[in-house]
Image (tube, rainbow, N blue to C red; front, side, top):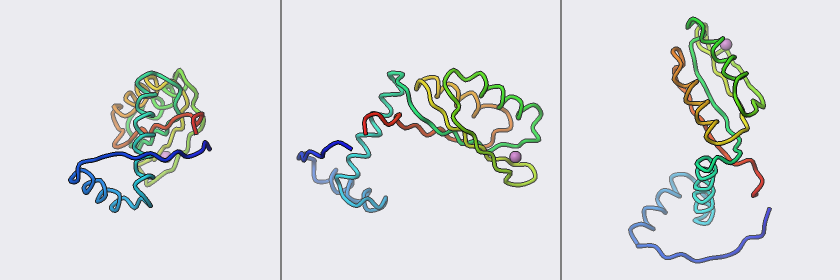
Length: 137
Ligand code: NI
């Protein structure tokens, strides 16, 4: 972890009050923590846009009785241009599966991969969560 540097910022009163309410709702310990998270989030987005290497989790909830869906999900993972680091599969009930796929690769490719899987017929819900590959921390 790099050393911390103190800085000051100026905000309009109503903006700061709104920010403080958000901090309290989310349970942040301090304004600094909340601002650090926002700044990091911005740079993760930027890493994706500039196509740097990111690590991501793709969560999928799907109906495994949907014809060909299981095969499509497996094929897409084999064809992914980055690395699939791990997958976790949980059988939620008779029809429904939860799968978490952990990816490493170029930001835009991770997005394309996720969008492809999330749009498959039988995928009921899901989300891609991106983070940076950890080099800056
Ligand atoms: Ni299952």
